[in-house]
Image (cartoon, rainbow, N blue to C red; front, side, top):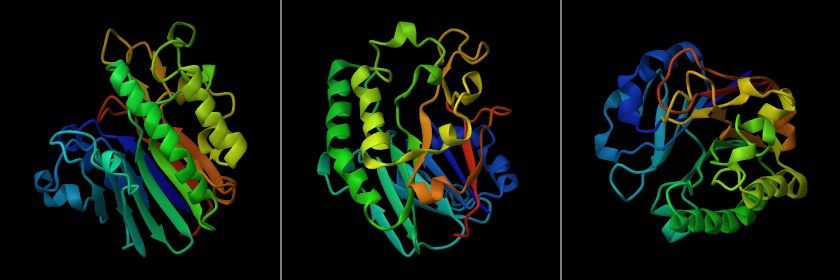
Length: 260
């Protein structure tokens, strides 16, 4: 069995103060993909670099206290790919890939466009340039899982207030159509939806800090594990963990009947 967790930390130091490092050992995960580190290499202590018998690999943003992704694994990878080879994207620390034999595990943090029109344009440009890279990954001959905060709710069932958010970043028609292209044209599979095609309230992984979004479960499904068909077909269980809060996102755990 292979267990993979994805979690946007909204700051690794903040998440650790909220009990992340105490929670991780009991999860028995093979890989933990994290996003939004908001930390540089020198900001991480030994427990953050190697929690629960695991070792971490990271792609930090150049800007302090911003973005950044990481992957924790139980053994050393055969290959590490840090970034996409695109300077402006890589400066924001948004992509990290570890290869283990025929398995590739990716931690992704797709930009948010909610803060301004300028950032929404950055998001669209990222999507345009990332789409062919996703196709390359799909065609690589590897079994691949891309875990992370995609900052897009794909379907109406993926957020509580879909009607009022149709013109807001994260649920724009162009963003949703882009995810559909990944699934329908390239062949990727949304692992959670494969196992829970009709889930609504239980699927949310992010809640605004405004109002009582968490208390009332007014959430969005922004965190996905998107996999090649061979790996996706091996998925046996997927769940969002809500008993503790480490950030404004919740961990998404998927179990695969797969030997890494």
